[in-house]
Image 1 (cartoon, rainbow, N blue to C red):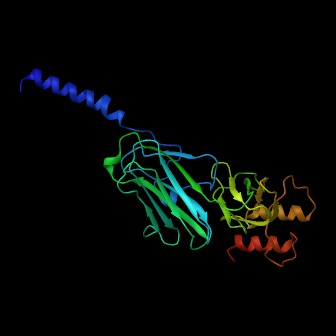
Image 2 (image 1 turned 90 degrees about the vertical axis):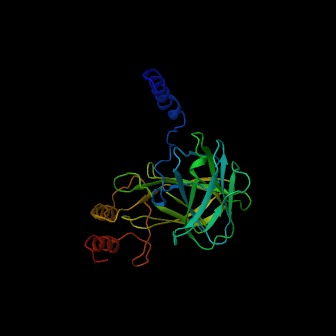
Image 3 (image 1 turned 30 degrees about the horizontal axis):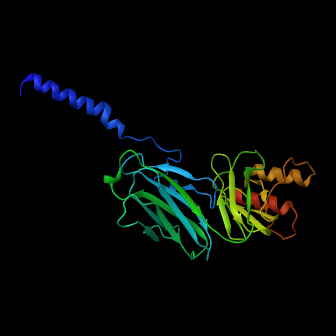
Length: 286
């Protein structure tokens, strides 16, 4: 091969490297990093908006999580708005060794995937993994839309709010919020928000728990088809929380109502027994 032909060949290789290969690259979607179940992002059940994801590289995968309840049925749907051969895998947090269910439409590589999770076997956290069937399905045009839905009952409503530290006012992320109507969500790590849609109307009991804070219990009422804004100000299980309780006992005005669960003497009142309980936790006695 003479130098002229070699130069032309190298020039074309340069063009492929600079212009063609980047054309198949895709940028990360707004939910990254979510490539493992530990990094899973929550999905709001029956949200009116959709989550828009993509596979920005051949081995990319997206994980979501939600709280499921025994006897309820959920549908996880991935709508193909690009050219992806997608697979949905459902995992039970109690056993992550293998998928509980798998959805992969055979005979139609670019089909929308819809995983029907009927009759959930128990209450708890469930994960869904969305991935490409294989690396050959990666094209750089691998966008898709994701929903999780539960249809039930007449005139359901929405319960939503923000979870905060009652002492500092800072947002609390990854709190588990559950009601006795078999609805649940995780508070968002960025803004502390949570939302439970298609929530049955009427009286209900709400609980919120997260490491480092005292459990929260609230009795509420949701109007038919209504929206209840319920902010949860949780008491930290530290010395700041003890001082907060002492201020309440001393009659100080608290700007925002706090959320707390009486689990010591059952008298329904915030008192010294609650402060002692937290002190014992701080000291490692509980």
